[in-house]
Every structure is written in structure tokens, then in C-alpha cells.
Amino acid sequence: MLLANVYLKRGKDESLRRFHPWVFSGAIHHIDGQVQEGDLVRVLTADGSFIAVGHWQIGTIAVRVLSFEDEPVDSLFWQRRLQAALQVRRCMGVADTPQNDTYRLVHGEGDHLPGLVIDIYGPTAVVQAHSVGMHVCRHLIAEALQQVMGERLHNIFYKSETTLPFKADLGQENGFLLGGDAEDVAMENGLRFHIDWLRGQKTGFFVDQRDNRSLLEHYSKKRAVLNMFCYTGGFSVYAMRGGARLVHSVDSSAKAVELVNANVELNFPGDARHHAYTEDAFKFLSQMQQDAYDLMILDPPAFAKHKDALRNALKGYTRLNARAFEKIAPGGILFTFSCSQAVNKDQFRMAVFTAAAQSGRRVRILHQLHQPADHPINIYHPEGEYLKGLVLYVE
Ligand code: SAH
Image: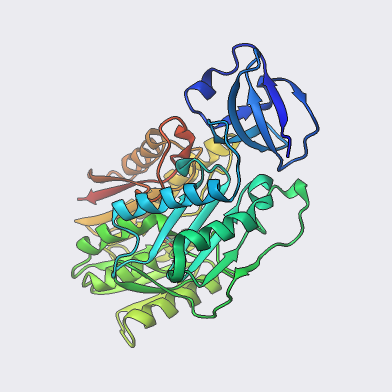
């Protein structure tokens, strides 16, 4: 198939030469050929020399680059890319270990595959397309995934209903591309979790907190733990294994509370140390007793989904953390996070600093946390950094 050629304006190839994987619409001089959203296109400099091949899309980002080589994007291409992604996960020690079969295999730009996310949950892969181009390629991707994963893969669930550009109007597209097992239990660091890829948020589980949950486990002994915004209860289950005295999980969604209860039951059947509450975070924090908890986790949803929401988001982080500083017991430890891509590390730290100062407590930073290795950041695409956290000691 002949691909359309996208010619850049003079001088607009600089960021691509540094392997930044996006072409902005303003950088384009003209297009030679017909293009539809999701098509593969070749990107050429003003002089007509090849620079990249990628998916065309409608919007500020016009092309998301798949390769800086002039190569066909065919079955072999997908196999090579997925194989490379698996290789890196093996070297990180997250894939194919007896203790862990839950990991992110493909993290978009971080794996040179903009618009594609693949999470592995034991025998099931959940594939999520964030671009029409990846949606169009879903069957090729599923075939390549089977080749690369071999017999350990039984199911591929495609979950792009909420992640595809709304305007592309591609209809409802959630469903199995392979298999269809009802078995939904996966293992993370030796703990088991039900993964709700059918109805859950994201791909069904927040794989990105694995290392931070592990760290929390080591701080949990004999502590009274409050896991705020608990969702599937990842932090709660690790705290229980770490020897917490009690663990309270809070989420405003009743479905999340069901999930956390099921996951605690799966790992610690009948353990009375755990209780879950369906409640709004701010309400719970303002009504709870002073000093009731000496280990708290705040892992809210992204407060800023876009740059324009930044100011309000920062205020939100300050307000939330201030409540925690007011209430946490002396000698308490606070794990606090932001997963807003639009909020950078310094801004988040400043928001937490303001909260600490308002509370008048003495606070020290013990750890600075971020996304784990299976959510890699392409150094030429700093926009890929999104998760940050602080572990604080509150006197
Ligand atoms: N910590 C979780 C992920 C949190 S996702 C993990 O490790 O998996 C964010 C969660 O916050 C969602 O489950 C959502 O239902 C919940 N949430 C959103 N707004 C809330 C609010 N105002 N109060 C309590 N929970 C809220």
C-alpha cells in the first residue's frame, strides 16, 4: 500500500531528529496523497528526505511516530516491537517470575509505540488503544502478541471504549480478541488480585504502584493504616502482609469497596484487621478522629487532566494533604501521590509543602517516588513522566 507523504515546513524536523515521537499540525507544509485518521503516513523534511513513519491523527498532534527507519509496519514489525518490550520486562525482573505475573508490557511512547498500552495479568493481556491508528492495527497487534507470548497467553481483552478519541466515532469496541476465560486472578509480588478488566478503571488495575506498594509494606508493621482512594486495595493488601495493626480502606465508589473486600479476602480470608468504607475522601478526613492513623496513603485520581486545570489541581492537592497533616498521629508516615501528567514533580512538592506549612507540623521527606520501570520514560519525550509521590515523616 502506498502511504501518503507528509512534508514538514523548513526547520520543523529538529525535534524529530532528536527522536521526539510527535509531529504537530503546525509543523506540516503539505500532504502528498489522501489521508484518513488512523492511516500510516511517511514524514519527510522540506527537502524530501525521509524522517519517520507513523499514524496520522486529527488534532494538534498530527502524527505519532512508530519508526524513524523507512520500514514496513507489518506483522514482523509488531512482533519485533513486542518482543523487545518483553525482553526489557524480563531484564527488570517483572515478567516470567514465580512471584509476579502482573506488569505493563507496552507503555506507549516509553516503548516507541505511541497510543498503545498493554498490561499483562497472568494468562490475560489487556490491550488499550489511545489512537485511531492503534485501533486500526488491533488485530495485527493481537496476532503478534500471541506469537511473542506463546502458550502463557490464553486471553486478549481489547478495552478501548473510553480511551479512543470521542470524535472518531468508532463505536463500542470492548471484547475478547482471543479466549474469554472468566478466571481473573493475577499475582503481584506474591499477592493475588482479582482484575476487573470488564468494568474496572484503566485496564482493570493500577500496575504503576507496584514498587510503591512494596515500599509501603516495609513501613506497615504494627501501624494503623488508612488507604484513601483505595480502588482495588493494592496498598491495603500489602499493608496487611507487612503486619499492620489495622487497615481501613476508603473509596467513594461502592464498586471499588467491593473489589478491595474481595482482594483482602483472597489473600487474608477472615482477617478482622481490615475494614472498607464507601465515603468521600474529604468528608472522611474531616470527620475522622485525630491521631487515629499513623500510616496514611493518599492516591487520588488525576486532579488535572489538562494544563488549564493546573491551578485548581494544585489547590486540590494542598487541601487534601493539609487534611492528612492535621489528623495523622505524631510519628506518622504519609505516602502521598499525584498521577496528573500536567503537574510536575516540583509543583506537586510545592503543593504538599504548602499543606505542611498550613498545618504547622514538622515534616521530613523520606522517599521521592515515581512510576516503575515497566512504565519507562523515553528521554526524548519527557511528557511520559506522570506519577510522582512523597513518603513523609510527620513529627
Ligand atoms: N490507589 C489505587 C488507585 C486509586 S484510583 C491503587 O493502588 O490501585 C483513584 C480512586 O479514587 C478511584 O477508585 C475512585 O473511585 C476514587 N475516588 C475518586 N474521587 C474520590 C473522592 N472524592 N473520595 C474518595 N474516593 C474517590
